[in-house]
Amino acid sequence: LWTPAKIIEDQVARVRDQVGDRHVLLALSGGVDSSVVAALLHRAIGDQLTCVFVDNGLLRKNEGGQVMETFAKHMGVKVIRVDAEDLFLDNLKGEADPEAKRKIIGNTFIEVFDEEASKIEGVDFLAQGTIYPDVIESAASKTGKAHVIKSHHNVGGLPETMKLKLVEPLRELFKDEVRKLGVELGLPYDMVYRHPFPGPGLGVRILGEVKKEYADILREADAIFIEELHNADWYHKTSQAFAVFLPVKSVGVVGDGRRYEWVIALRAVETIDFMTARWAHLPYELLETVSNRIINEISGVSRVTYDVSSKPPATIEWE
Ligand code: XMP
Image (tube, rainbow, N blue to C red; front, side, top):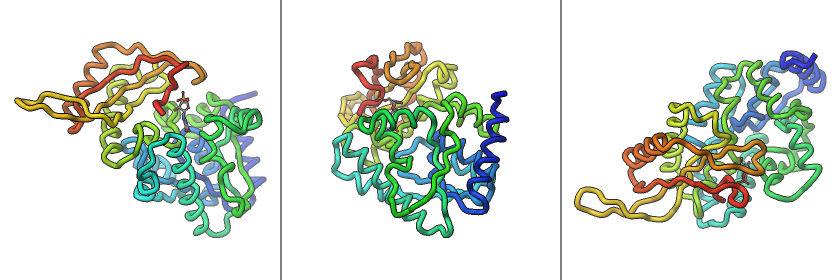
């Protein structure tokens, strides 16, 4: 009988068998797949698992704290948090091209992860949150964004020198099954049913050159949008929702003066497969609340827009 509990039991046995008394390394991103692998491996092998969580400075508000809270504090998983914001921002300096930014972020991730991994002794295995659609996808095509997407968290990009054997306990599972496993393993519902978040993070939601000032503003705007979606019970009616930072200055009137400040775009979509998507018909009242809060609470933003483009041709992300 296929139940999450049964799959966990089987995978725990398989992992123990494969790993024995050796040590396993996992790049924990905080996304569903790597989180479920972390919880599963922790159950199977406890302290033989070490996770590395790289804070690239392009995460959502409080994201790093939440990952550490859930795994290190509540579950007792060994997690090394690497604060690499400065390195990522330095490497991104002056780069405005979306695909070049993706490459820089991916390569910097590998550099940081590799350096951290080399400090840990006696590791023989690398665990990955590869799921069944990833297996199909990389068999079908080695090009295109979809492949690039996962590559920086999957082994494709990791240095050959590491010579680690792979542990991929989710290889035969679909996303909805992975989510059920996560819940069964005791992960917080909000973590397991969160909207997808791209590997390059806010790096592709700040149009053009990435700067810390922009990332800080975007983090706040995004957090307000997501909070209000939850308050209005709309979060789970959308498949993905987020704010985008537009590096253009638009006029606003404050008191007697005119101020030229940044623009935030809101994006929310409904989709089954992320290949096509319809913009979410959010209630005007909700948009009004979000817009007022962003303009009033975040200094430096004078205008909020809502993206009413469907995919195709408009992609879900703005870059
Ligand atoms: P688009 O923008 O192509 O996005 O309509 C489809 C889905 O893919 C995600 N996405 C990415 N995920 N790295 C990722 O890990 C990327 O470079 C990337 N680009 C887009 C996007 O968030 C959406 O869920």
